[in-house]
Length: 192
Image (cartoon, rainbow, N blue to C red):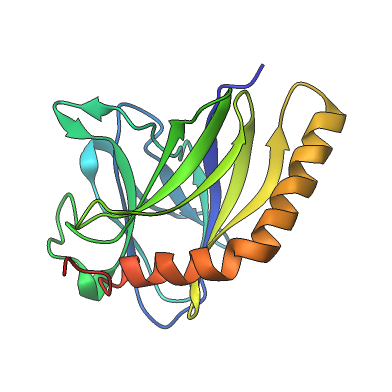
């Protein structure tokens, strides 16, 4: 049985710039380890930022993408931000790419990309409710990509069909989504 959750299992920073990952949620905030040494890099517990160093390859555990609800009157969110663009280096960076998993119509869910500073929605990826994604978050010079490694659903065939559908969608939309994502993370998208 799926938990209707999207998990970030790996983070690859293929750039020469440090990034921050931050989360405001009730659980599944994330623990990060260096993929080569297994050394713990940090935790997002309690709203702590974790720095993703240039060239880092991290393995994440318990790193969910929050729903669209709120905690203590503040919207839940997972935010990725260039370290150099952060307005605050403690707690909420104040800017960046914000990702949530929310309910859509007709028994669907969606991953929603937002500019964290303006809260403006940039893009969304729709998929069936009752599915669980394992994701590699890849930061490249030309964009931030969410590479779907696996989708767990009620049967192998449904998982295969989901994987094919997402693969086709990403091949068409990934470059544009990735470009918007990196612009938000670098604070290039600001209120006009």
